[in-house]
Image (cartoon, rainbow, N blue to C red; front, top):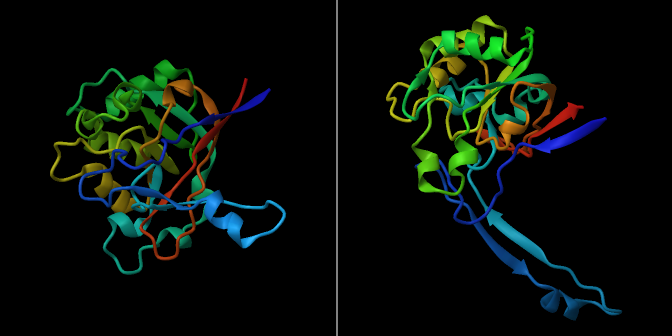
Length: 230
């Protein structure tokens, strides 16, 4: 039997946003009381307004986000196939904040998962950060990152797209961001701010993470889900 698992964080005013990004703002635009005056027979409606960064909530980076090449694709230009497909999730929750996860660690996590990693798979990394620290300031600072060798592991294994339950796949204390630089060099994109990865850790599933098609945007806010066959 198939079931859907929500892998997305909530969007709300005051939510955690990567430092320097536009903060999320939400507001009531019109109310039932206001719109009822325009109609007869009892009909009315209400709508909610919001402003947010294209890299704010659960989202996928466009190539143009991390690559200054003027020909790098914006989110609306990227192939939909990158945002959907067979996936596994590796448990790397044992690693301490501000440390690098390396290739040997991913080999161990893959072996422990009991899963086969196939070329063209999507791979998610469960650090446990969302589960431990969601809606706290520490969510933005207290997490491990994928080091240079782990980033190269993604390339060598033929991973199509990857994702993580932190604001960035890089170590928060890094000044060089090797994982993003790998993405730039190899045109591999990734999801940030995923949620509930504990529910898919060490599983194989279908990942669906279609981003908003905002013309010219450098990232796509996403309602990411896992389709799991029990």
